[in-house]
Length: 291
Ligand code: SIN
Image 1 (cartoon, rainbow, N blue to C red):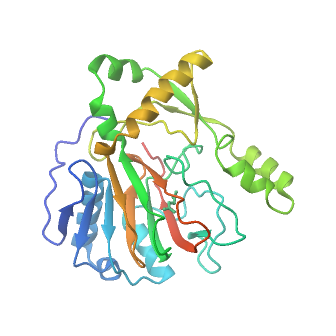
Image 2: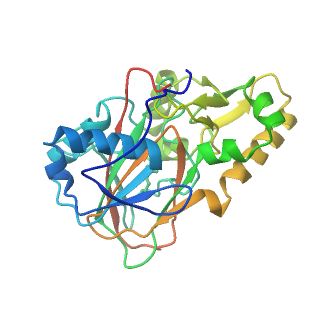
């Protein structure tokens, strides 16, 4: 898709403070519960998310129903989901909980949510319900900045390539196998999520920016290359995502909300808080086609 000429961000309702020069913004003085009601604010939120790739909001009071309506500003909250337990009342909310004796989810890997699906979510709303006394930060990195950092020759080469994505070498198989009847759960997940192929370079449909669309958690190999070539090229690209200049690191407070563009970013949840309790409510949202 060519770059839409009309993409000129400007804001009248949102007080936006860039979080780093390359990625992220804090949105000040806004209760998302109020934003649900106002079409101008909703439109500015959509444009700000496309421009900054991840948005942070402090001190938010949201019921599960309101969090769902916030997700609906950006997309359909009932599209692609991962395998986390769901909220007891609102099925579109995934409950990501770390607690003593509980499962340790491997969100401490760089990933774009659910790229093992043929139509991954376009974004995510994450709401901090319980945070540890220190640690448990989340980091995001910009896939558009990674693309822009590459030389034109490599950009052109990557644009000819496609990669296989699967959940097989992520943390999900060990999650299934830790559950009662885990073998059956694993078999079912495999049958329902066959490996999928995505282009290595995608074009963001709103900004028209190109981005590198491979991640260490779910990208298995690049088609048409030997295993060694594929591992080395992917390793090079994954290291590029680790550059601090392309990242934003959020120190959560209770009731902080982060909303990210799941096409243009990867994220990593730091697992440095021992056995402390951390509880997040996550809603992925999507469209009929992510790209
Ligand atoms: C996720 O990987 O979507 C969750 C990130 C987090 O818990 O901070």
